Amino acid sequence: MTINLPPDYKPTKKEEFMNPNQQEYFRQKLLGWRTELMKETEETLESLQDGGLQEPDIADRATAEMERSLELRTRDRARKLISKIDAALQRIDDGTYGYCEETDEPISLKRLEARPIATLSLEAQEAHERMERTHRSD
Image (tube, rainbow, N blue to C red):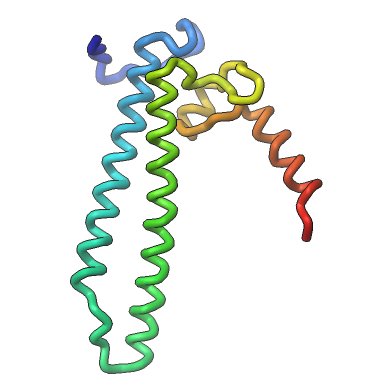
């Protein structure tokens, strides 16, 4: 079943939570984000393949190596993010998207808009972070 959303559609609290329009809206948002990350990853791979460490100056070579290392860390974060996006898309398919993993309560539309891969409501996330801070072994 394909849903054609109006170009200016935005989910609102007035609608039933996670109705087909909202699900399609977030699916498109997640897919767009995923496509953007994949494109950036391809560009990074191309630049890493093109740019061998041919710098004759040791300082230039060190700078290039540092930039390369930073780029690889950034790509690793993107890879992890893509896997979270895939998990969110799976939750849309199985009907659990938008609901807190801990409380089964709806995650606010405002939070999902800002962080479409969110799996916890704001309250559950804050409690989780408080727990981490108190149990951290510094």
